[in-house]
Image (cartoon, rainbow, N blue to C red; front, side, top):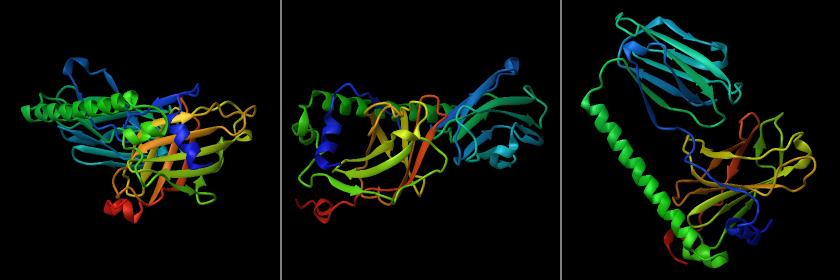
Length: 313
């Protein structure tokens, strides 16, 4: 695997599919309003193994009335006066559903609320605010502020995509969009440094890490014999030890990993213009239904050179 091949992968527009990935991990603040006349409504909330989800209620909870289906599948369940925090264990599988019911102390309607926790291999809703009464103007102002931030992020993302679409191909395109500068591409063959969760297929055969001035990428070549059924990566996250996440830009796969194919590769490209994105990361890849998830630990990207940090090229 060479730097030239990596550059080709970044600019290739062949038949292999490419997926624009949204920002992974925590999905932001979720707000749920419970109407007294609609006590039977059930909201679905995304949860993920090892990631914390916190419910904040505007009413005091009855701790005795908190019921979580499959409680033994959660490593943490902590009920406070008006908060509820839980962490799914690593043993839950994508698509599993757990019914959560809570009761309130004041006796007002609705007296209880029900949610369905839906397991996802890497994405979770970190904070869920639940309102039984009318919200104050401050919460609407905060929601509007968050909407403005998200809209600005969307505009910046659209501008980036337009700039890359209008850029020329090949090395010229990489230089024109400042993805590649005079420092070139730094490369690590991670060899046996990377760890993979046991008993999971397909099995990573080789793993390579790259860094340019604004991007990082992980290239994983899979052992074709490790997948009894064809496997295609449809999403990815890159999470550091401090729980920080890189913004995944795209997931590219050369073809389905299956016993009939050999040397299939997956490329995960992410933004990492800051020097703080150093150290060890965990890469998670999942297929469409999320049932077969590949987790690779100890992914370490090349450090920026002294010239790159000082601006001297």
